[in-house]
Length: 173
Ligand SMILES: [Zn+2]
Ligand SMILES: [Zn+2]
Image 1 (tube, rainbow, N blue to C red):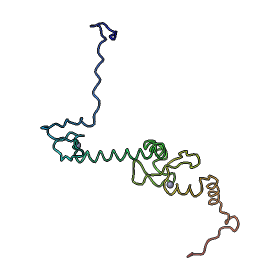
Image 2: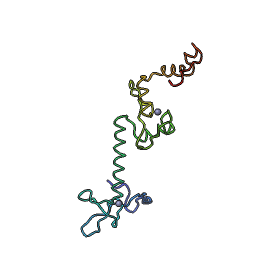
Image 3: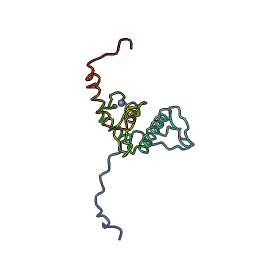
Image 4: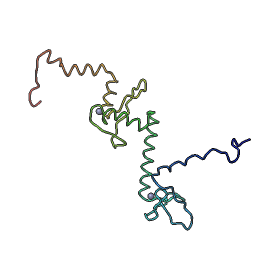
């Protein structure tokens, strides 16, 4: 017995789903005699370039495909190196106000000078996004918060002023 309902008593068929949103029409079948069409947008009037034995594309869709491929490669690279996706990286950046903590560089969505994903080299924990300057600085002081505390104290309360009062280098030096 494979049929759960006797004939004629099957439940009412489900309501048909609305058609899915489509950004591009499905690729038209390429058959001999049919007008050659772009595999992505279906255009038959644009200049078409053969990108593989069966696929023709217009210049605009070739650019779109290249862009998508580049973005995918970038995402794969970031996942491989840092274990986070580009989208997750952008969430970190958004929390930082779209820039390095020094407020200098922005680097959203593949901007040419994007920020580095900084991580704790001992534990591997990702900390945030930093510009090259800040990233290098952290490396030079070996991620030591005590260094920065000492430096803040040094700048706000210079020892030379405490020892000698305010003294200035001679002009022209
Ligand atoms: Zn096209
Ligand atoms: Zn910075």
